[in-house]
Length: 226
Image (cartoon, rainbow, N blue to C red; front, side, top):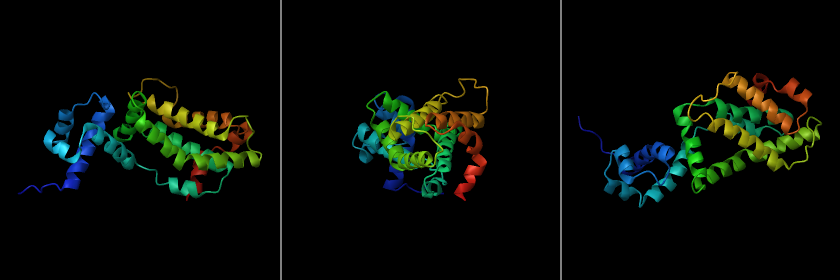
């Protein structure tokens, strides 16, 4: 049986998919073009036919890796909710659950790339953080303001932008610490870790202790997405 020949677009896609784990593991400068070609099952000449340089492949891979990230199908439903305390709690829960509990190998590629980028030129990391700022930051900041307006949260004296970034950085740090596997023996399950971290962050953002205790109930909050 004859093997079907890949089209140019299919070959380009195959090269990009093969490049992601190598760049994630070694970074831009340590990866050799022969390694990239071998991983993709092509010659170096064919590799350069699709990408003019290793740097061009890296730039295309950045966009490919972001596009391949699995977006939680509940995100659109979350973003459509009116700003409220419950929306703030739900948003933190969704993001932290993804960062802490989604540890399948394909889900850990982007954190590796971002960490490598932070140790290098920061280009991919900047792209990654700008996507969070574009997709999630406005909804979380509006929900926090609504919580304060409704009396559920106090003004802690810090700009909303800073509070939302503090939340993101705490979640990202928790994700990065899981890159090598379970190197810290936390005394709770990943699910309980999310609960404790979310409560800690909500209080740090100014949400009243009694409000967090009474209303941060993930099962009930997730019903808002239906």
